[in-house]
Image 1 (cartoon, rainbow, N blue to C red):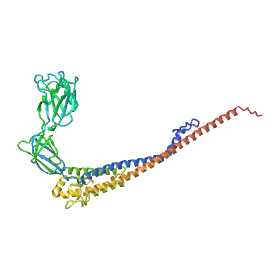
Image 2 (tube, rainbow, N blue to C red; image 1 turned 180 degrees about the horizontal axis):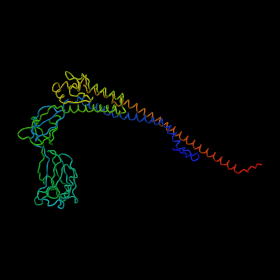
Image 3 (cartoon, one colour; image 1 turned 120 degrees about the vertical axis):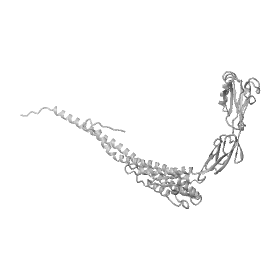
Image 4 (cartoon, rainbow, N blue to C red; image 1 turned 90 degrees about the horizontal axis):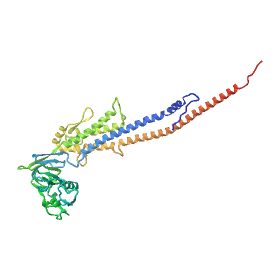
Length: 464
């Protein structure tokens, strides 16, 4: 609520005086608001820090994971025109002979030549057209006077999503239009069976009316086929040209037949996936380093400049990353596999050092990264444990520090609310006092004027 007083009687700018008094009373609130903003900014900065440190933990967890092989896999094929192979980390390394003798193909059925001179005038017939793919449930399509042209039948089939795609082809001859039905999926098990019931001409199987679209009256221009191949001498058939279970963890895409010479697929261990994971850790670590540098910039320090929690995060993260004794033999630290600290305090990764270390002692590299799987958990297991002490949403140091700051913000807000109530009452009281002053001065002026008027009306006093 706002109050005002004009000062018309005294001539004073009493509202300005009241505003100045109230503003003076608000000085403690202004100071509390500055403190509140400082705490709020620290909370925001700590949340940013928590996000960055959590990224470090995620990168460490990806490296400590021992559920799959340490190294990834790559695959090469001697005949890319026959097969393309993609592999996962679980694909066994080795050499495989792949001989593709036949590709899978989808069935195509067409109406005979010379049947339709147009697509939207000549009638096909009426009734119910049923399309069944393999042993699946048949889809019934109603053909009536609204859609019994070649174009109408095409559109009805495509709308029904019956497992075949219909199109119209012009073969260039007399009455050139032909309906073409192609199965949506390859393989013998996806062949289409077309039947008719309720043919408008009274016969559901003759070569007239709607029954001219049953299998017996269509040309099979392309029969359905399964893919046939051998993998290391083992015969395989597949309804599709994507074979996923012949080599564990690998997908073989059949592109063409092998011809006289089978394709050799070679699967090798690859450092690429491990390099990507190490690079991700380095990037996450360096993001924390950059954040710390920005907060402690001498020229423009951040709200966490000198903050104990930030110092602890950086110190513990650095000491664990640079620690020794996690591997065996000559491989004892991350620097031995190419992750080293630069002069700027940021990590650098040299993939060539990693490759040399793997060539020299792959087991020691795995022990360094993952531990021995029983008593030790590797350097990234240690890093994950260290970081979780900061990022844990219940007991983590960052969480505790944030809770403390939020408690301060809540307490200050309560103090501000209390002070606002007090100042509102003070403003009302002062405004009332100045209003009463105006009334008092007005009464005095009225009394003075009345006295002067009375004195002026007294008879004159004569003296001898």
